[in-house]
Image 1: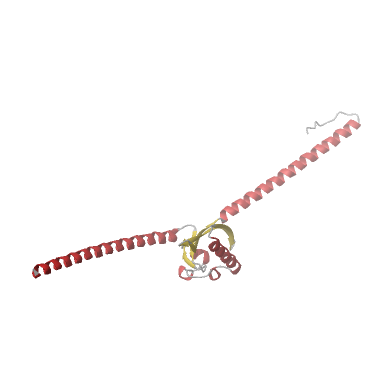
Image 2: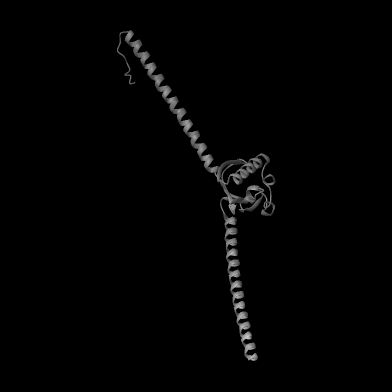
Length: 203
């Protein structure tokens, strides 16, 4: 009887061990799948930052750069290793940085997305910034910046051409009105001299 009881306990122990091993293997598999998914997501995200044609940025609550798209190297003239973890004062001209910091703090405090038009080193940009909330609290700030310099130049050229055309039209209109007045004067002088008016006036 005692031997049978020992055998029963042994089988129960073996069963518990097998179940534990199965759970362990399942946990390991799930952990590996999770790690693979995270690694793929990180690779996708890094490739996006590497080749993005627009400027993409992520900042922490202290307004330090966390992630930047590769094209910031060209904009700021520094390698990525010297751009990450920096304050805006360390990356941009003083007045520009101060306004940027104030805008960023405002976005984190208000928790709303805001669009800005900016100018830096003779180029024009449109920037959209928005908060990233963790557990309902704005914790990080992200956004993207589009270089609209070519668009601004085109708009300026169109405005200048439109102003030039309006000036020309006004000049031509002024000439036309002056010609009418001259024709009226000539007609008046001819009529005073007893002659027939020379010009037909259309007003």
